Length: 279
Image (cartoon, rainbow, N blue to C red; front, side, top):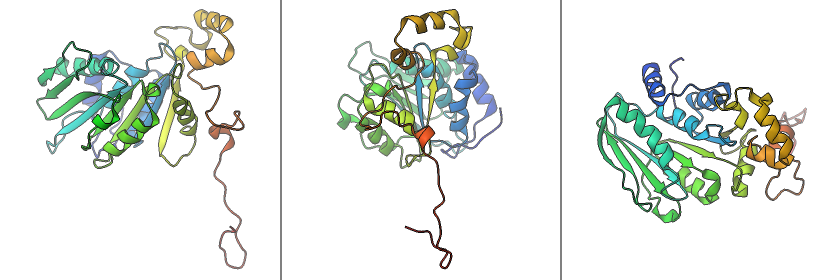
């Protein structure tokens, strides 16, 4: 890995990344590496859609933790994991805690058993990590945040994404939207397609199909179990549940429209005399 500048004006330290990933037991496969590479190259808004057992949460945490190390200027850091309730973000919190505990840098933590209370930890180098619920969007307080993971983003309202986008604006922070299409709200599938092409949100989206997790399905797309699931599952449902690809888009007159296929930049014709583009 090479050292790359992130949007948080922080260098990705190779030693930090290797240590974090070793403590997680994380070694990204080629499809998981794509969103992480985009993140390191400066993409602030990532949508990672996973099929069943594809490792979307692990990939989201692997990307996030890579830029959560100590800063040269000693500046404090604040990160949120936002879920539909307080329970959903706990998997991502647990992965991140595993890293900080392995490094012996947790200064303070609170992890109550109650399903209605947040989990919080602080490190000895000024990082604070909190779980949040979007069940009451007003509780996503107006404070500047360095980075946010939206856990099970597809189960949350579109307005939650907009709220998170606003919270990272001051610090030029990042948002990673992690989720599955099954039982998700329509906006998530629409954004998945939209962000695969050039878009005004400056977002990037990635699909991690179930078979990309070769630890579970060693044969990849041709794994016998994947083939068996394909034979016994309606095609649209199979592609949604295991392929991490939406089969319809919300609100389209022509549902076959796909931004990644049907949109491309065009140069307008220019007036030969004025050299100005035609309207």
